[in-house]
Length: 424
Image 1 (spheres, rainbow, N blue to C red):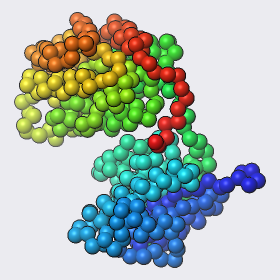
Image 2 (spheres, one colour; image 1 turned 135 degrees about the vertical axis):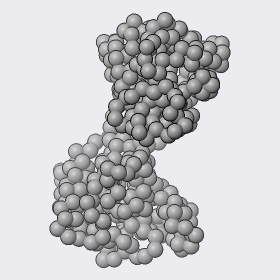
Image 3 (cartoon, rainbow, N blue to C red; image 1 turned 90 degrees about the vertical axis):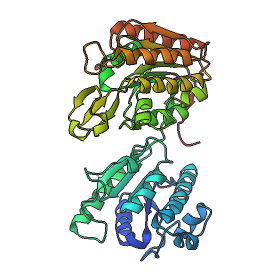
């Protein structure tokens, strides 16, 4: 660090009424690595012990347009947490925008980790983020902690309730991790005129690789998103931040999971960001012919009579019926119709996934036909629809996709600008 250069700082988010001792220890470990520390208190019931946080719990509550006294009067713990969570998000965003923090770390149990994770969601991709929690175990969902951000989740091994040789070792490692991340951190700078996302799942991997090769040869940088629910959410967020010049949405399966309660549900906003911004798009209903559930012996009884594709020991892919395929097509059409930029839809008439190929375990030509016909009837007349007597994984179909992408890019007005995809 040069003379007069200000130290970088790590933000610690914690409930200081219950975690003061542990935070003091972690703070000291981080400061030993030549960093400053900013402490954000999200505690509700008590007061910090042995330390004064930089942002008191009362300030956190105030940022949520309430007072700590009012938060403490809430009829349930959950409602109180919701208020402090909102305040923590506001303050974290403010600290980031002011350039006061260069990484964030938290330690806590259920409520503390949920509040910290929510605050970290306002931080951009690439910004260092670490959560230490006993909830980081293999039997729990990581969705509430990671969300759509690159958060490192570290198992504390023990409950965070005092210091001992085991917890000190964990906190030493966590402090070293966030310190190293902060020291190397530089705001992400992306040249947004050549990055192109491609969505895919394993059952369309061949198609993705064919398209990848063609885009790369043409000077684009393909960015691959796994449409597992979170993947689609991350892509939509990054589209909104200005990462991409165009989109190849090869797999729109997350709409099916959203309708039928599958594991790959990306929420109702899927397939909206690019359309709103006028970014050129090529849409292919890849993997639209199934939704994902768990291991075969966990599939609910109501789906037992459906056609299935055994993907791996953790996932069973279920075929929607004809009426469901029609509804999926209608939903996809509404998304496509709302696009404000150039868009082309391509239909692989011989199958949208491996299982949907003739002879495959989820092959259903009646369902496919119902989907394709409903989609075509529901799309606005000006939207080009290209139908090909091919399976989605055939190489010539990738040629058609690439040609369509070149066409929408030629029509688009995307400018070659260097962007910083940080928070707006």
